[in-house]
Image (cartoon, rainbow, N blue to C red; front, side, top):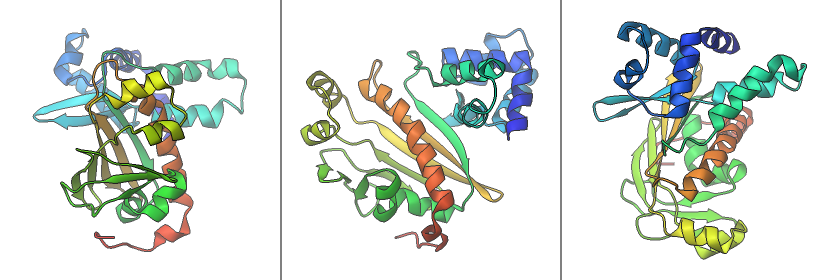
Length: 268
């Protein structure tokens, strides 16, 4: 995968496309073409190369195909190489990593894709079973996992519940979606949230977190899409940093946990 990323970044037109998505994420092909002196077919080919290198993730919204910049491969390269070689020789990747993780005020969606060496069934276990989520996430969900059912989030001794906090989709091994939890006084106290931040976050509408699983060879392509934030959302800023770490922890956990070798049933 590193070789694909290096090849994708070698072309100035592809770097320009990444710059455009960094400036405003979630653009259609038509919008990207409008900002380039390039034929639509050429833009499509460049986007295909970026997608193959996992630098761009696509999400369908109705009939529109939106393109999102994906920081995961740059994070992986930075983690692998920066500590081993002279920083001056890899400053390009350090700078690009920073740029890809920067907050885009013009876009409120969070979209992130990674590849995990496992099966959809095992990854589904890790996402839904309390004995596993407690280990890498330090939270678990109390629910029957039926669409429309209420969810209670548990973090240690703290329980988060409230109107609208529910399962939205439950399609085993393929797609899981639920509303992001209520910011309760107990949660705010547990994470040492300031009074001002609590007042701001607790007044924001619930957002939606979606996990999309797609088998690719001996791996699973996992795309996390978190949407429904208002402009200037404090929760969006918080989860933007938290998701990157959580997805990394999930990947490490799934690839190193023998218990996940047992194949679960969809209702587990």
